[in-house]
Image (cartoon, rainbow, N blue to C red):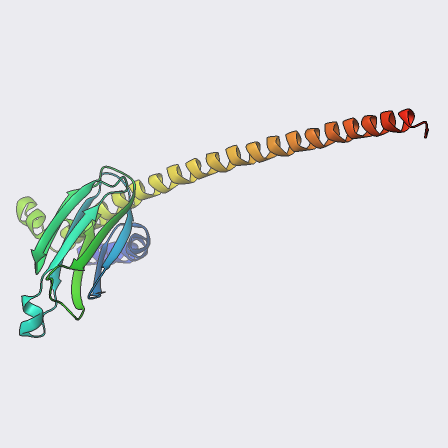
Length: 216
Protein backbone atom coordinates (compact mmCIF):
# COMPACT_ATOMS: atom_id res chain seq x y z
CA UNK A 1 0.00 0.00 0.00
CA UNK A 2 2.79 2.38 0.90
CA UNK A 3 4.63 1.54 -2.31
CA UNK A 4 1.53 2.34 -4.33
CA UNK A 5 1.25 5.71 -2.62
CA UNK A 6 4.84 6.48 -3.48
CA UNK A 7 4.20 5.70 -7.15
CA UNK A 8 1.15 7.96 -7.21
CA UNK A 9 3.10 10.76 -5.59
CA UNK A 10 5.93 10.43 -8.06
CA UNK A 11 3.52 10.44 -11.00
CA UNK A 12 1.90 13.58 -9.64
CA UNK A 13 5.31 15.15 -9.12
CA UNK A 14 6.36 14.86 -12.78
CA UNK A 15 4.21 17.68 -14.26
CA UNK A 16 4.99 19.93 -11.29
CA UNK A 17 8.70 19.35 -11.78
CA UNK A 18 8.36 20.23 -15.45
CA UNK A 19 6.49 23.39 -14.50
CA UNK A 20 9.11 24.25 -11.91
CA UNK A 21 11.84 24.01 -14.51
CA UNK A 22 10.02 26.63 -16.56
CA UNK A 23 8.97 29.05 -13.83
CA UNK A 24 11.07 28.59 -10.73
CA UNK A 25 14.45 30.29 -10.39
CA UNK A 26 17.21 27.76 -10.93
CA UNK A 27 20.87 27.26 -11.68
CA UNK A 28 22.86 28.29 -14.72
CA UNK A 29 26.43 27.16 -15.40
CA UNK A 30 28.09 29.07 -18.23
CA UNK A 31 31.55 29.54 -19.72
CA UNK A 32 32.71 33.05 -20.49
CA UNK A 33 35.50 33.70 -22.98
CA UNK A 34 37.10 36.92 -21.78
CA UNK A 35 38.89 39.03 -24.40
CA UNK A 36 42.40 40.37 -23.81
CA UNK A 37 40.88 43.82 -23.36
CA UNK A 38 37.34 44.66 -22.38
CA UNK A 39 34.77 42.98 -20.18
CA UNK A 40 32.26 40.20 -20.62
CA UNK A 41 28.97 40.49 -18.74
CA UNK A 42 26.01 38.25 -18.01
CA UNK A 43 22.66 39.36 -16.62
CA UNK A 44 19.70 37.71 -14.98
CA UNK A 45 16.19 39.04 -14.41
CA UNK A 46 15.42 38.37 -10.73
CA UNK A 47 12.58 39.37 -8.45
CA UNK A 48 13.03 40.70 -4.90
CA UNK A 49 13.79 38.53 -1.84
CA UNK A 50 15.58 35.82 -3.82
CA UNK A 51 18.84 34.23 -2.68
CA UNK A 52 21.63 34.30 -5.28
CA UNK A 53 24.81 32.25 -4.97
CA UNK A 54 27.55 32.04 -7.60
CA UNK A 55 31.05 30.63 -7.96
CA UNK A 56 33.50 31.64 -10.66
CA UNK A 57 36.99 30.45 -11.53
CA UNK A 58 39.57 30.86 -14.26
CA UNK A 59 40.01 27.76 -16.41
CA UNK A 60 43.78 27.18 -16.23
CA UNK A 61 45.31 25.02 -18.94
CA UNK A 62 48.90 26.12 -18.40
CA UNK A 63 51.29 28.03 -16.18
CA UNK A 64 50.87 31.30 -18.09
CA UNK A 65 47.12 31.22 -17.75
CA UNK A 66 47.30 30.15 -14.13
CA UNK A 67 49.28 33.28 -13.29
CA UNK A 68 46.70 35.54 -14.87
CA UNK A 69 43.97 37.06 -12.73
CA UNK A 70 40.58 38.57 -13.34
CA UNK A 71 38.32 41.17 -11.78
CA UNK A 72 34.65 40.60 -11.05
CA UNK A 73 31.87 43.07 -10.35
CA UNK A 74 28.19 42.47 -9.68
CA UNK A 75 25.66 45.31 -9.74
CA UNK A 76 21.98 45.58 -8.94
CA UNK A 77 19.30 47.03 -11.28
CA UNK A 78 19.79 50.43 -9.59
CA UNK A 79 23.57 50.34 -10.00
CA UNK A 80 24.51 49.33 -6.46
CA UNK A 81 27.70 47.26 -6.23
CA UNK A 82 27.01 43.89 -4.62
CA UNK A 83 30.39 42.27 -5.27
CA UNK A 84 33.72 43.66 -6.38
CA UNK A 85 36.96 41.66 -6.49
CA UNK A 86 40.25 42.30 -8.27
CA UNK A 87 43.35 40.21 -8.98
CA UNK A 88 41.72 36.86 -8.24
CA UNK A 89 41.62 33.56 -10.09
CA UNK A 90 38.47 32.30 -8.34
CA UNK A 91 35.78 33.73 -6.13
CA UNK A 92 32.24 33.57 -4.85
CA UNK A 93 29.44 36.02 -4.27
CA UNK A 94 26.15 35.62 -2.45
CA UNK A 95 23.35 38.06 -1.72
CA UNK A 96 19.59 38.36 -1.31
CA UNK A 97 17.94 40.57 -3.88
CA UNK A 98 16.14 43.68 -2.68
CA UNK A 99 15.18 45.08 -6.08
CA UNK A 100 13.36 43.61 -9.04
CA UNK A 101 15.21 43.80 -12.32
CA UNK A 102 18.33 42.74 -14.16
CA UNK A 103 21.37 41.85 -12.04
CA UNK A 104 24.62 42.09 -14.00
CA UNK A 105 27.91 40.29 -13.37
CA UNK A 106 30.93 41.51 -15.35
CA UNK A 107 34.38 39.92 -15.62
CA UNK A 108 37.59 41.18 -17.21
CA UNK A 109 41.29 40.38 -17.20
CA UNK A 110 43.31 42.63 -14.90
CA UNK A 111 46.72 40.91 -15.05
CA UNK A 112 48.14 43.79 -17.07
CA UNK A 113 50.37 41.63 -19.26
CA UNK A 114 47.79 39.50 -21.01
CA UNK A 115 47.83 39.25 -24.80
CA UNK A 116 45.33 36.41 -25.01
CA UNK A 117 41.86 35.84 -23.60
CA UNK A 118 40.79 33.62 -20.75
CA UNK A 119 37.93 31.24 -20.08
CA UNK A 120 35.95 31.67 -16.88
CA UNK A 121 33.42 29.22 -15.52
CA UNK A 122 30.42 30.75 -13.76
CA UNK A 123 28.04 28.63 -11.70
CA UNK A 124 25.05 30.89 -11.03
CA UNK A 125 22.40 29.53 -8.61
CA UNK A 126 19.14 31.33 -7.86
CA UNK A 127 16.38 30.70 -5.37
CA UNK A 128 15.74 27.02 -4.67
CA UNK A 129 18.92 25.95 -6.46
CA UNK A 130 21.00 28.06 -4.05
CA UNK A 131 19.62 26.31 -0.99
CA UNK A 132 21.81 23.79 0.83
CA UNK A 133 19.51 20.79 0.84
CA UNK A 134 22.08 18.54 2.53
CA UNK A 135 22.03 20.81 5.58
CA UNK A 136 18.24 20.91 5.49
CA UNK A 137 18.08 17.10 5.37
CA UNK A 138 20.47 16.77 8.33
CA UNK A 139 18.71 19.46 10.34
CA UNK A 140 15.17 18.12 9.79
CA UNK A 141 16.33 14.48 9.69
CA UNK A 142 14.59 13.73 6.41
CA UNK A 143 15.71 11.75 3.40
CA UNK A 144 14.48 9.95 0.31
CA UNK A 145 10.96 10.69 -0.84
CA UNK A 146 10.31 13.03 2.08
CA UNK A 147 13.28 15.16 1.08
CA UNK A 148 12.12 15.22 -2.54
CA UNK A 149 8.64 16.29 -1.42
CA UNK A 150 10.19 19.05 0.70
CA UNK A 151 12.11 20.25 -2.35
CA UNK A 152 8.92 20.08 -4.40
CA UNK A 153 7.02 22.10 -1.81
CA UNK A 154 9.72 24.77 -1.87
CA UNK A 155 9.65 24.80 -5.68
CA UNK A 156 5.86 25.16 -5.70
CA UNK A 157 6.13 28.10 -3.32
CA UNK A 158 8.78 29.65 -5.55
CA UNK A 159 6.53 29.15 -8.58
CA UNK A 160 3.62 30.77 -6.75
CA UNK A 161 5.74 33.79 -5.79
CA UNK A 162 7.09 34.00 -9.33
CA UNK A 163 3.57 33.92 -10.79
CA UNK A 164 2.48 36.69 -8.45
CA UNK A 165 5.52 38.70 -9.52
CA UNK A 166 4.74 38.14 -13.19
CA UNK A 167 1.12 39.09 -12.55
CA UNK A 168 2.17 42.35 -10.91
CA UNK A 169 4.56 43.09 -13.79
CA UNK A 170 1.78 42.39 -16.30
CA UNK A 171 -0.59 44.71 -14.41
CA UNK A 172 2.07 47.43 -14.35
CA UNK A 173 2.74 47.05 -18.08
CA UNK A 174 -0.99 47.13 -18.82
CA UNK A 175 -1.37 50.30 -16.76
CA UNK A 176 1.53 51.95 -18.59
CA UNK A 177 0.08 50.85 -21.94
CA UNK A 178 -3.36 52.21 -21.12
CA UNK A 179 -1.85 55.48 -19.91
CA UNK A 180 0.21 55.76 -23.10
CA UNK A 181 -2.85 55.04 -25.25
CA UNK A 182 -4.82 57.73 -23.40
CA UNK A 183 -2.03 60.25 -23.98
CA UNK A 184 -1.81 59.34 -27.67
CA UNK A 185 -5.60 59.72 -28.03
CA UNK A 186 -5.49 63.11 -26.29
CA UNK A 187 -2.60 64.23 -28.49
CA UNK A 188 -4.51 63.12 -31.59
CA UNK A 189 -7.60 65.06 -30.52
CA UNK A 190 -5.52 68.17 -29.78
CA UNK A 191 -3.73 67.83 -33.14
CA UNK A 192 -7.07 67.52 -34.93
CA UNK A 193 -8.42 70.56 -33.06
CA UNK A 194 -5.33 72.60 -33.97
CA UNK A 195 -5.68 71.59 -37.63
CA UNK A 196 -9.35 72.62 -37.66
CA UNK A 197 -8.61 75.96 -36.02
CA UNK A 198 -5.74 76.65 -38.43
CA UNK A 199 -7.98 75.77 -41.40
CA UNK A 200 -10.70 78.12 -40.17
CA UNK A 201 -8.24 80.96 -39.61
CA UNK A 202 -6.65 80.36 -42.99
CA UNK A 203 -10.05 80.39 -44.70
CA UNK A 204 -11.05 83.60 -42.89
CA UNK A 205 -7.75 85.25 -43.84
CA UNK A 206 -8.15 84.29 -47.50
CA UNK A 207 -11.73 85.59 -47.60
CA UNK A 208 -10.62 88.89 -46.05
CA UNK A 209 -7.79 89.18 -48.55
CA UNK A 210 -10.01 88.50 -51.55
CA UNK A 211 -12.61 90.98 -50.31
CA UNK A 212 -9.97 93.68 -49.95
CA UNK A 213 -8.82 92.97 -53.51
CA UNK A 214 -12.50 92.97 -54.56
CA UNK A 215 -12.10 89.57 -56.05
CA UNK A 216 -15.25 88.29 -54.37
